[in-house]
Amino acid sequence: MSTFADPIPHHRQGWFSRTEAWLDARGKGAWIAAMVLSFIFFWPVGLALLAYMIWSKKMFKSSCCSHKRRFGSQFRSSGNSAFDAYKADTLRRLEDEQEAFETFLKRLRDAKDKAEFDRFMDERGKSATETETPNA
Image (cartoon, rainbow, N blue to C red; front, side, top):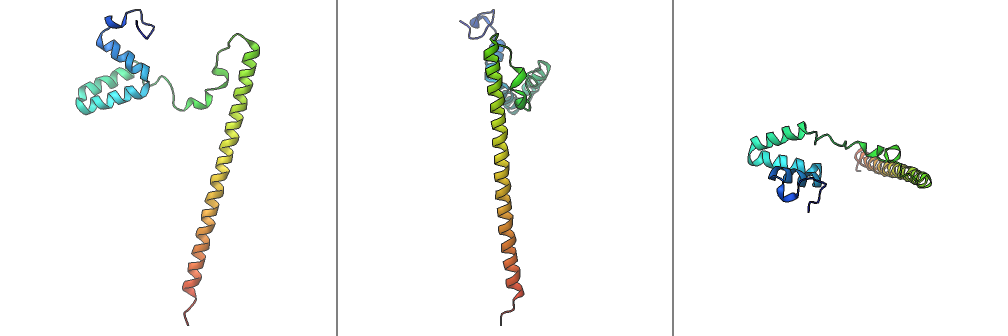
Protein backbone atom coordinates (compact mmCIF):
# COMPACT_ATOMS: atom_id res chain seq x y z
CA MET A 1 0.00 0.00 0.00
CA SER A 2 1.32 3.44 -0.93
CA THR A 3 1.87 6.06 1.78
CA PHE A 4 1.02 8.82 -0.69
CA ALA A 5 -2.22 9.44 -2.51
CA ASP A 6 -0.81 8.03 -5.74
CA PRO A 7 -3.04 6.23 -8.22
CA ILE A 8 -0.07 3.98 -9.09
CA PRO A 9 0.94 1.42 -6.43
CA HIS A 10 4.31 2.03 -4.82
CA HIS A 11 5.95 -1.06 -6.29
CA ARG A 12 4.84 -0.08 -9.82
CA GLN A 13 6.36 3.40 -9.77
CA GLY A 14 9.74 3.95 -11.35
CA TRP A 15 12.79 4.71 -9.27
CA PHE A 16 12.59 8.38 -10.24
CA SER A 17 8.99 8.73 -9.02
CA ARG A 18 9.78 6.91 -5.78
CA THR A 19 12.84 9.10 -5.21
CA GLU A 20 10.86 12.26 -5.94
CA ALA A 21 8.10 11.21 -3.53
CA TRP A 22 10.69 10.35 -0.86
CA LEU A 23 12.40 13.74 -1.21
CA ASP A 24 9.04 15.58 -1.27
CA ALA A 25 8.07 13.89 1.99
CA ARG A 26 11.24 15.21 3.63
CA GLY A 27 10.93 18.77 2.36
CA LYS A 28 13.04 21.37 0.61
CA GLY A 29 16.11 20.62 2.73
CA ALA A 30 16.28 17.07 1.37
CA TRP A 31 16.12 18.39 -2.19
CA ILE A 32 18.93 20.83 -1.52
CA ALA A 33 21.04 18.16 0.19
CA ALA A 34 20.52 15.80 -2.76
CA MET A 35 21.53 18.55 -5.18
CA VAL A 36 24.68 19.44 -3.22
CA LEU A 37 25.71 15.79 -2.92
CA SER A 38 25.14 15.20 -6.60
CA PHE A 39 27.30 18.24 -7.42
CA ILE A 40 30.04 16.81 -5.21
CA PHE A 41 29.98 13.31 -6.69
CA PHE A 42 29.04 13.97 -10.34
CA TRP A 43 28.38 17.55 -11.33
CA PRO A 44 26.22 16.88 -14.43
CA VAL A 45 23.67 15.10 -12.23
CA GLY A 46 23.73 18.05 -9.83
CA LEU A 47 23.14 20.44 -12.71
CA ALA A 48 20.27 18.31 -13.98
CA LEU A 49 18.78 18.18 -10.49
CA LEU A 50 19.05 21.95 -10.13
CA ALA A 51 17.35 22.44 -13.51
CA TYR A 52 14.58 20.03 -12.49
CA MET A 53 14.06 21.80 -9.16
CA ILE A 54 13.77 25.18 -10.88
CA TRP A 55 11.59 23.86 -13.69
CA SER A 56 9.21 22.07 -11.33
CA LYS A 57 9.21 25.06 -8.96
CA LYS A 58 10.23 22.89 -6.01
CA MET A 59 12.67 25.61 -4.92
CA PHE A 60 9.97 28.27 -4.80
CA LYS A 61 7.01 26.49 -3.19
CA SER A 62 7.15 28.38 0.10
CA SER A 63 8.94 31.48 1.19
CA CYS A 64 11.12 31.46 4.28
CA CYS A 65 10.01 35.03 5.01
CA SER A 66 6.29 34.22 5.17
CA HIS A 67 6.30 32.96 8.78
CA LYS A 68 4.77 36.25 10.01
CA ARG A 69 1.79 35.81 7.70
CA ARG A 70 1.25 32.22 8.78
CA PHE A 71 -1.63 33.10 11.10
CA GLY A 72 -4.83 34.98 10.54
CA SER A 73 -6.54 35.06 7.18
CA GLN A 74 -4.58 32.21 5.64
CA PHE A 75 -6.47 29.61 7.65
CA ARG A 76 -9.50 28.17 5.98
CA SER A 77 -12.84 28.22 7.69
CA SER A 78 -13.74 25.08 9.56
CA GLY A 79 -17.42 25.66 8.95
CA ASN A 80 -18.06 26.26 12.65
CA SER A 81 -18.26 30.01 13.22
CA ALA A 82 -17.81 29.74 17.01
CA PHE A 83 -14.64 27.70 16.60
CA ASP A 84 -13.34 30.03 13.87
CA ALA A 85 -13.89 33.05 16.15
CA TYR A 86 -12.13 31.27 19.04
CA LYS A 87 -9.26 30.28 16.76
CA ALA A 88 -8.86 33.81 15.39
CA ASP A 89 -8.96 35.29 18.91
CA THR A 90 -6.42 32.78 20.20
CA LEU A 91 -4.07 33.33 17.28
CA ARG A 92 -4.34 37.11 17.67
CA ARG A 93 -3.57 36.77 21.40
CA LEU A 94 -0.56 34.53 20.66
CA GLU A 95 0.75 37.00 18.08
CA ASP A 96 0.39 39.83 20.62
CA GLU A 97 2.23 37.79 23.25
CA GLN A 98 4.98 36.97 20.76
CA GLU A 99 5.35 40.64 19.86
CA ALA A 100 5.45 41.63 23.56
CA PHE A 101 8.09 38.96 24.24
CA GLU A 102 10.21 40.11 21.29
CA THR A 103 9.95 43.70 22.60
CA PHE A 104 11.01 42.49 26.06
CA LEU A 105 14.01 40.67 24.58
CA LYS A 106 15.02 43.79 22.64
CA ARG A 107 14.85 45.90 25.83
CA LEU A 108 16.88 43.25 27.66
CA ARG A 109 19.55 43.23 24.93
CA ASP A 110 19.63 47.05 24.89
CA ALA A 111 20.09 47.17 28.67
CA LYS A 112 22.89 44.60 28.47
CA ASP A 113 24.58 46.56 25.68
CA LYS A 114 24.31 49.79 27.68
CA ALA A 115 25.76 48.13 30.79
CA GLU A 116 28.69 46.73 28.77
CA PHE A 117 29.30 50.11 27.16
CA ASP A 118 29.17 51.92 30.54
CA ARG A 119 31.63 49.38 32.00
CA PHE A 120 33.93 49.90 29.01
CA MET A 121 33.79 53.69 29.40
CA ASP A 122 34.50 53.42 33.15
CA GLU A 123 37.52 51.16 32.53
CA ARG A 124 38.74 53.47 29.79
CA GLY A 125 38.35 56.48 32.07
CA LYS A 126 40.24 54.76 34.88
CA SER A 127 43.11 53.76 32.60
CA ALA A 128 43.30 57.31 31.20
CA THR A 129 43.53 58.87 34.68
CA GLU A 130 46.17 56.35 35.74
CA THR A 131 48.39 57.25 32.77
CA GLU A 132 47.94 61.02 33.39
CA THR A 133 48.84 60.83 37.09
CA PRO A 134 52.64 61.06 37.44
CA ASN A 135 54.28 58.65 39.84
CA ALA A 136 56.09 60.79 42.38
